[in-house]
Structures are given as C-alpha cells and as structure tokens.
Image (cartoon, rainbow over the protein chains, first blue to last red):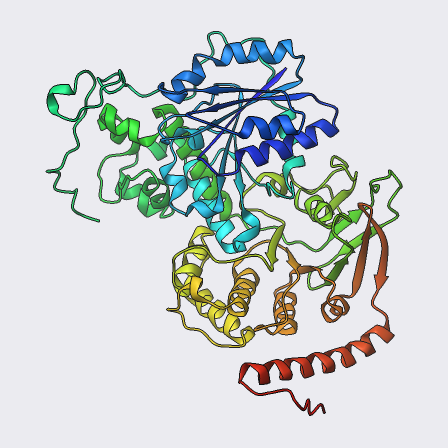
Length: 235
Length: 335
C-alpha cells in the first residue's frame, strides 16, 4: 500500500485536490482511502464518504494536532492495510504553520492557493519547505503573471519541490498528480522512520490546561517576546 | 559557482557574484549583503531559536541553497527556441482512434471549439504536461518534432502554456508598475525598465480606456485588466503557447491583442465560440467526446465573411458606445 501525506493551510483546497486525484487513481483501478486529521470539527469525512471513498477522521481536540498525527499514523496505516487499500492518503491542516506531518521517504504534498498572497510561501514553515510536491490551487481566477510570481516565491523556499498547478473544481492537473503519487513509496511500516521536521519544544502550563493569565501561572517551557529589541520598530 | 564556495565565501562577495541570492536569503529573513562571514559561519552562529525560525534543519537549508543556486545558474543558459509543437492523436472517450497529426508553429492562431465536457481542458492539459501516451487520451506531444526534455513537465520556469481566461482577476495589492516589476523580477528578466515601459504602452494600446502606471491593478476595469494581462503575457512570459479562454468584446481591442501575441511569436490557442475570434484562427480543432473529431481549415469564403462579421461587430460597438454616453436607441441610424 502506497502512503502519501498531504498538508496545507486551512481552505487551501486540500480536500478538493485529493478528491480529484483519487478520481484519477480510481480510473486506474486503484482503491484509495483517506485519513483526515483535524482539530475541532470537520465535515470533510462526509465529503469523502459521499464519493464512496473509505475514510477515517481523527480529531486532535485538546492536543497539538501534529503530535496527535504522529502518535496515530502507524495505526492508520494498519487500518488502510486491513481495508486492502492500494493507497492511503493522510490529510492534515497546517494550523499554526510551525510543524509538518511529512515523513522521511514518504511522498509529501503541500497544497497552497494563489489567493493567499505572495508573502504566504515565506510564512509557511516546514510543511511547505520540506514537501516533495507543492500543489498550487485557484489558478483559474488569478492572472498568469500572479501565478508565475507565486510559483517563483514557492520555488524560493523550496527549490527542490515539483510545483504543480491543479484546478480543484475541474480537476485539471489532477491526473498528472496521480501519476506522481503512484510512483511514490509503499512502506511496509513506519516504525523507526523519522518526521522531516521536529515538533515544537512545548510543554508549558497552558499545554496542560491552564487558562489564567499571569507570570505565576506560566510554568515549564516559557519564552518571552523581546519588546526592547532595537530592531523591533523597523517595519 | 562551486558548491563549496557557496558556503565559505563572505556574504558580501556571494551577493556580488550572484545578486539573485538576495531573494533566497530574504525569504528566510536573512541578510548577508554586508556580512564578512559566509553561510556556514552564519548557520553556526544561529541560536536554536533562530534555527527554528528557518523552518528547516541545517542540512535541509544547505541543500535548499544549493538547489536555488543551480536553478538560478540554469536560467542564464540560453533558452531553447521552439519551432513547433506537434499533437499526435490518441483516442476519444469511447476508445476510438483520433486521426490527427497537427503541427503548431509560433505566430499561429488556432481555435478550439466544442461544448463543455468535450475535452478542451484535457487537450490543453496534454500540451501542458507534454503527454507521451501517458494521459487518458493517449496523445503524444512533440517539441521541435522530438521527444521533449522532461524540464517542460517538471520545471517551474519552463511552462509550455500561459493561460488567460474571462474569470481571471488581479488579486495583488500593487500598482500597475509594481506589478509588472515584481513579475519581471521573479523571472530575472534583463532590461526590466524597458520591458515595464513596453508592457504599459502595449496594454494601453489594447485597452479602450487608458490607465496610469500608478493605478492599482485591482482598480482596473475588466477590459483594462485583460489588456494588461495580454501585454504582460506577450512581453514578460516565457511560455511559447498562450491559451485564451474567450475574451469578452468589451473594453479591449481583441484583434490587436491577438496580433500582439502573434508578433511576439506565441502559438495562440483560443477556446471560443465567438465567430470573429474563431475565424481569426487559421484552423479550428473541433472537440467531441474527448477527442479531436475534425480539423477545419478556415476557408477563403469564411475569411471573406469575417470582413462582414467585423462590420457587424463595429456597429454593435458603436451602439454600445451610444448607450454608455447616455443616448437612446430609438433610432438605430445603422450605416
């Protein structure tokens, strides 16, 4: 069973791109399933189910979604295998742009959209910078020049990635993506494999449920903003 | 530049030898332009917090820099000229063979017609992906009558097709001049000042109503936007093929727009059902059931009729102008 991790900021079109890619994979007679990781609530599982795609949802709830991802992904692979899938795709929203679900040697896709602004590629962290394939969506509604500028900004932070333009509505470009996903790795297991980028060095009192504001409640790994930084005032 | 040099040359010297490197560092909020130490020394000096802000490990950062430098160096290699793009037929959705072998050459206009779902997008997709019998249609695309280099499929900087459609809008918050500049810079275009001037004057020549370099692109009218997009594609885009998905007949000189693209040696594909645009093409590809069902050469009778169609079009434009200026059409006063 092949395995692919898909990440991307909220509303960038991850689900639409995955659906279109699966449609193309199904035409090649592949059984593809999805595990959707989200924070609080998602309706995307219904979207997949409506298309007859085997799907499981994991809601991180009070936990950090990326920690939740990494401590569950092995079991998800087991689930995919038990369903006799030819390919399992994990979909996770990049919520604070700090982390990335991408795993070494496993095909990693990041989905971002042209409307998010040209500063965005710089702001998105490891999920974009360590991806193998960057899918850019919503190209049908912005100008050619803006598409080119946006893609070049992506290439600046991740020049090794294959950059693809996909229309999530018509599916243009999705067939091409499916051929690349199909050429990806089919790991026997994930045991001992590493994330491409480390998780945050967290664990402060707020991680443990503290809600009150004030120095005396801040325990553990706490870091302070440098407000007296002389360079802080320069725009 | 040698790989070892990238990491040990003083920042100042690195910027001098390869000015484009500033873009790479600035996308990580780093600036080495005044620095006497090199990249490795800089990485050594970063605290754990600062490293974290890079969003990648030291090894990943180093390999990203190597990739970037080799990407920039490839840009200066002369671009291969495209003399022709050939479409070798595959099959339609029912599996029937597509009996076509079409050669597109720069400066040519080809219309693509057919209802929604007839396979127009897939045809374009095949060209863009330089299909080698490996897409659902089984078509083969050749460049200069040869199997194309994979860069046409995988490189961001070598895109075969530039697209323009009715639905496209500008979304960046920039003035016209800033916009053209940022596009040119992203492609490392030489003589950028001259190019900016050219794009601006061509766009104004195409637009019904003129606009300034200082106008914000989001404030342009539909016709002005389309005019700027076309002038920009003609002058700044490196893609040899331009696909136009209908252009409305308002606020833009469509014929001049096509002439500009043709003059800039683009292969122009127009998906349109507008008779004037369709007849401006030398041939029309008729799509049906996912395949090219027929290739119609524009006949001399059609060309003669084009003159009459353009006359009708001018009349409609005049009527439009009268409506715009607040007149009534109680009497049409047709010539």
